[in-house]
Image 1 (cartoon, rainbow, N blue to C red):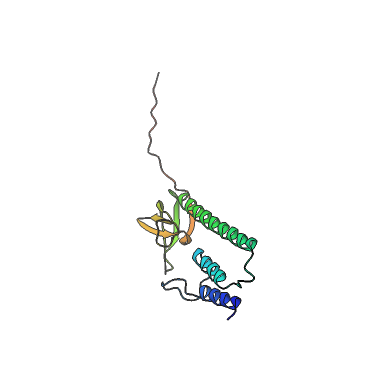
Image 2: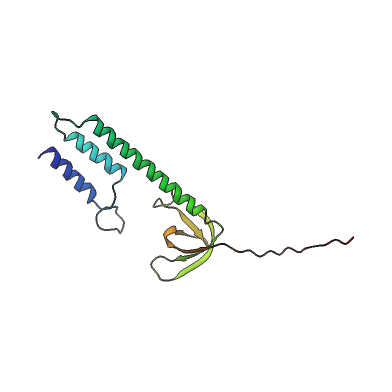
Amino acid sequence: MSATSSVNTQYNNIVNAPASSDSISGPQQTLTQNDFLQLLVAQMENQDPLQPQSDTEMASQMAQFTSLTQTTAMSASLSDMQANSLIGTTVVLQQSNSQQTVSGVVQAVVSGAESSDGTPQIVVNGTAYDLSQVLSVTPTTTTSNQTSSSSSN
């Protein structure tokens, strides 16, 4: 088996592997950092010793990997900021697996780092919801019960 076909086989095994043991079926849609490292190791193990990969190609791949890592981290931060900006607003949410909606004031945010799937969730009426379930957002109106007092001179 040639080095190229071995790396291609490794790539196909990684890309076509199931995403997780959850109820999701079908091939994985994106490569993770771990997948990239597995491909890089397979490429290095199977390269022709008389014509190794050039150092500029390796540096280019590492730069792309670093860029991907930073973009992923920035995306997670932006999602957390978006969720935090909803605190105190009134939202209408689509309930999971039903056509029913629920409305309420966003009370808190569960950070993506703390949630089970890595995405931030908003807490409405004591229940956590994904941002993808938000149908509409409106400012929360509050009524003031202040009484004005006047002093006479």
